[in-house]
Each structure stands twice: as C-alpha cells, then as structure tokens.
Image (cartoon, rainbow, N blue to C red; front, side, top):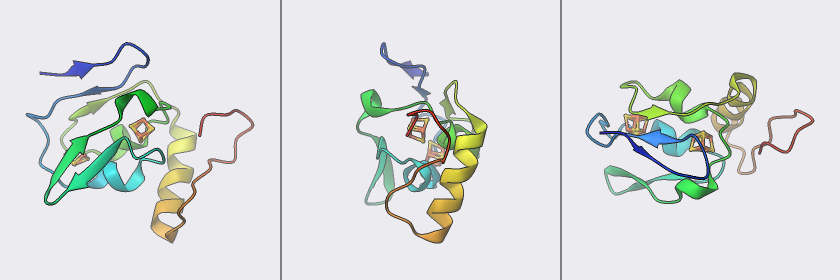
Length: 94
Ligand code: SF4
Ligand code: SF4
C-alpha cells in the first residue's frame, strides 16, 4: 500500500520495494537511505519532488510528481560521485 505525505506528492509502497538502493543513491536530500541491506524512507518531508527516485525505481514502488530534467542532472552527479547535487535549473528545486 502506498503511503503519502501531506507536504508533498511523494508516495512509497514498501511492499513493492526490492531494496536495490537506487533511490538512496539518486536522492539529493537523503530522503531514502540504506540501513544495512534494507532501504528506509527516513525523511519524507525533505522531499523536493525532483523525481529522480521514481525514475530509477525498477519496481515502481515510488510515485511523485517530479521534474525529469532535474532528475537527469542528479543521476549524472550521482554517477560522477559528487556529494552536493544541483540540477542547474533556475528554480530552487534542489
Ligand atoms: S523525488 Fe527527489 S528529493 Fe524526493 S525522495 Fe525522490 S529523489 Fe529524493
Ligand atoms: S529504487 Fe525502488 S525498489 Fe529500489 S530500494 Fe528504492 S524503492 Fe526499493
């Protein structure tokens, strides 16, 4: 069952999650984090709705109304190993 949060559009269904960890890698605000071999949604209120986690979740365990352009930039930053990720857009989305 998807859990939702009042302050944003983030929804997460732990029953669909296979703990691959991708959401914890791409999230710029550490909303999802690995705890051993299990991913946990630790800070849902910090979600800025960038959409990176939804884009990278292989089981569609995450739903959020996000900006795909920002997600692409964040994925690139994650791949390049940058600690601070910015999307480069003019808004304050991240
Ligand atoms: S939408 Fe972006 S900020 Fe929100 S949980 Fe997913 S990756 Fe993190
Ligand atoms: S990306 Fe999806 S399946 Fe992978 S750990 Fe995150 S919520 Fe679970």
